Length: 74
Image (cartoon, rainbow, N blue to C red):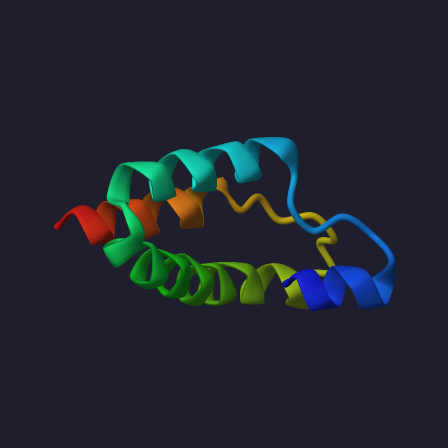
């Protein structure tokens, strides 16, 4: 995601997304953080794909981060 933002020269993460992901990563610890990033990235891809068909530029990442965090807690 950062690579796409770098290539398009625009911000990919908002401040709230960074804060939410940081808090979730701190809560989960180093062992679960990798799974957390994989989960929320895959969830975000599935979640954001329909928005791209309707030409929506900004898609909130918070729901994907929250769901990835919840899956790691299970």
